[in-house]
Image (tube, rainbow over the protein chains, first blue to last red):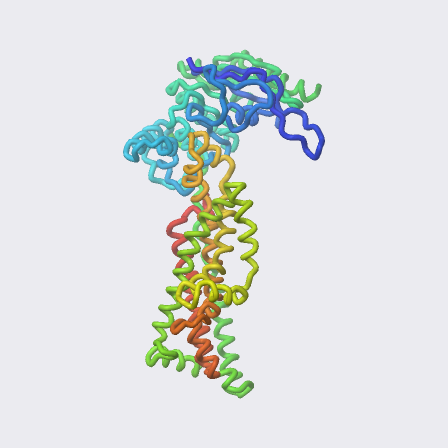
Amino acid sequence: MSLLRLSQVSLQYGPAEGRDVPPVLQGINLDIRRGDFISVIGRSGSGKTSLLNLAAGFLSPNLGRIEIDGRPVTGPGAERAVVFQDDALFPWRRVEDNVALALKLAGVPREDRLVRAHRWLADVGLDGQGAKQVWELSGGQRQRVGIARALAAEPEFLLMDEPLGALDAMTRDQMHELLLRLWRQSHAGALLITHSVEEALFLSTAVVVLAPDPGRIVLHEEFGYGRRFLDGEDPRALKSEPGFIAARERLLSAIYQEEHA
Amino acid sequence: MTDQTLQIPPAAPRRQMPWTSLLGVATILGVVALWSLAAGLGWASPVFLPAPGRVWAALMRAATDGYANATLLQHVGASLWRVMAALGCTMALGVPIGLLIATSRVGRGILDPLIEFIRPLPPLAYLPLIIIWCGIGEPSKILVIGLAMLAPIVISTVSGVRAASESQIRAARAFGATRGQLVREVMLPAALPSIFTGMRIALGAGWTTLVAAELVAATRGLGYMIQSAAQFLVTDMVIAGILVISALATVSEFALRAIERRYLPWIGRA
């Protein structure tokens, strides 16, 4: 089983005007296996997005190691797909061509890649929307295209940087269901950066709380609400459970404790 | 599965308000009326300011009988060919230069100072040098116009490449895009709106340089027609030539805008 491992990872941006800048992240240890769904929460500035950028290979750590199955990560790779907060779609391409981008870059013939793109579009609930232009879609639909584009590359790891941050509450709920279904279907390991404690708790097999100055893990706890939802339990009932509410308070405490410490 | 989000249709292309167009037409009519009045009341000698009717007659004369060895259509054809050939050559050179400046430190180090050197030079300053180096043939004329167009194309390309968002570039990198694929699939398309703006500015610069370019032993062209008329104080023909250049520049500007709307429909919507 594939394993994305961060070992004793520290990240520090360069010194500003001769002053030493504190590390953005320090001593991070995190394992993400295929089949895991790990959410990272924490205050602004705690290094959540930097953590994702390290895992994606957009940044290199100053200290520590990032490995996939023992091989060092030296940059972005097709086994790790990224979903961005601002969807990062290409408006000069139609929806289907956005989804097929990874396949095009990999040299897959146009006919094949369009067939696969349409299949992924159907999977995210956008059947028949492939010929549309990106700007004809709503915010929620655009994020679905971003997710379909990431999954079309058939990655081992799906890295998501607050992909639902700009969506309204109802659309977010729909997207939760979609994300969980696609996660189970793709067997990918997922890393989700989010500001929503409830979202993290509901979706994830484990939630990691980061505290700032320097960014470090202060809580790492496992949960199973997403799997229970996929097994047919009602999401509202799950979110009303005393255990869910207690866990949410625990996570919030971990965030606020650091804030008031 | 359907989205419950409020569907906001994309903004319709902004239409020019009718009164704005009317104001433009009224301004032109006002200038022509003032011009007619000035010529009619003899405020200036007809040698310096011929009446609009005389300019129109000169235009018709050039169109039917010709002026300075060619008909108006032949002059227009020669000038259009030079400006469009210069635009084509400059695009072929300027866009890659802009991409190199925007994507490579070495490219920026080598090419940026050269563009900054060329950018402020007036065409009449380098015209003699081009005649000495390249002779008096057609390439010299195209080169003079092309040099005036180069900086806007390069600068707009550089600016356009930088318009590609960090997440768009990262998305392509995450899918394993090579440097060439990154330029082809992300940076160049992202730069197209800016390149089109650069083309429009370059075309304007090209038309303003036309008369200077046709100083070089031309036998046809609107610039040549204007200069020939000026030598003999045929002011109505000079003004007719100026009006034709202005009309051609306006038509080419509208054509570029139409192409932009047709092929870059995402501008202002994405």
